[in-house]
Image 1 (tube, rainbow, N blue to C red):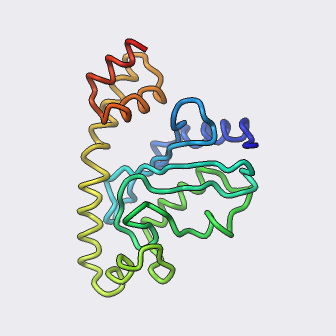
Image 2: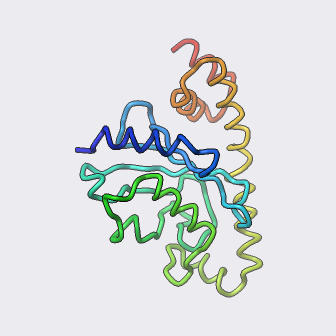
Image 3: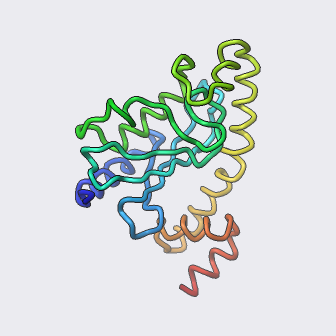
Length: 195
């Protein structure tokens, strides 16, 4: 059974300084504490700068004694993240996990991974080969994917979330409603008002 009070405490701590850290976590569907959504700001001076990356987080029953299962929802071009399904190759999400670590630590580690890939231990061999053999093309592709998948929707999305939150709706509900209507602000407002 997931330790609910620990997870709630972690969410509060993670979101307290999200402007500084660039990472945040929300409940995926508003009720289930073991299914979360993380967001990571693309690190400065990397091909991912300016992007907002969404991470699907599922907590196993043994959390925090078992690592969280994390996967990129936002498509990303990176040697340690599958360009197909968002699977992540990172030791702390596998055998190097410790109950002393938190979801915030894991998200910050993913953010660091974006800054400094480990192409010798790849999740995506094609991307890793490109990174090692033709870095300029790798960087250009990673920047293009960031523009295409991590910016356009998310930039507008954050503005829509802010607007609806300012109208008095809870942020978790706003995010899940916007997601359910593919970011259509008017449909989301209709659903929020009728709900």
